[in-house]
Length: 153
Image 1 (cartoon, rainbow, N blue to C red):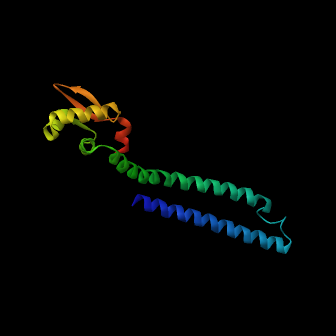
Image 2: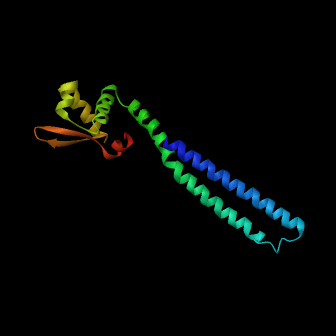
Image 3: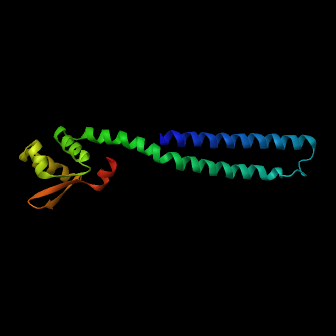
């Protein structure tokens, strides 16, 4: 919903800019045809740099408003692609971590998937920098690496 609002505001801004350029072109054309181009309220030689600057400003605002939303859409695709690159067991462990907001105890994973299997999967994920093991009492807390945690938000 937020993206739609930003898109509508962007379209309105661009439309307003196009209307302003069109109106000023008509204004300049009328004054040139009447021969009063030098004595008009707004000097015609200032129209081009004024609207060029305004166009850059509006373009920057539109980019600023829409780029985070576009990158979030791309991030969703990247998340699915990354999960598809993992082995099925690793994929399940990472999904479990994502469901647990990026952190779960190794003992819970062991109860769910089996102690030896979890150990092998976690070592593989740890060696590739996807997860981190942090000692926590008699077990370990398994956390998604910071850059992967941001990706899966």
